[in-house]
Each structure stands twice: as C-alpha cells, then as structure tokens.
Length: 73
Image 1: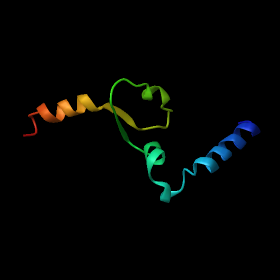
Image 2 (image 1 turned 90 degrees about the vertical axis):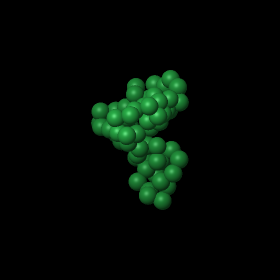
Image 3 (image 1 turned 120 degrees about the horizontal axis):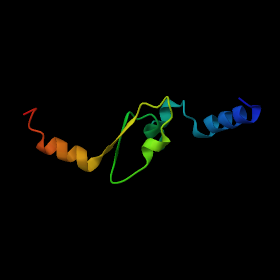
C-alpha cells in the first residue's frame, strides 16, 4: 500500500487504541462483537469487510422466534 495509507492506518490504530483490553466497552466492544442486535432497518451488512465475521439480527425477529419457537420446549 501507499505510504500515506500506512500512516493513516497507524494513526487510526493509535487514536482508537483497538488493541487495549482495558478499553473493552462501548464502541470497542461493538467492534469486536460476533453478533449485533438492532432495532429496525439498518445498513450494517454493507459495512462488513471480507475478514469480518459478525452478524446482524433484528431484535423483533429474534424476540418472536424465542417466544414462539416450541421445538426446544
């Protein structure tokens, strides 16, 4: 990659401190989440990169499934 890109990535890592375990809250926790629950429409799937493994689930659909799925009972 270009030198400018490498400097930008280094600065972003410094600013967001992504490798700091003591910052495991808020946006840092969301960035490392495997599953994200959202309320209503969203475009989060469009933000995924090739390496991302997280999934987006709608709260309403998941609640309905948990309330009325009788196969596990």
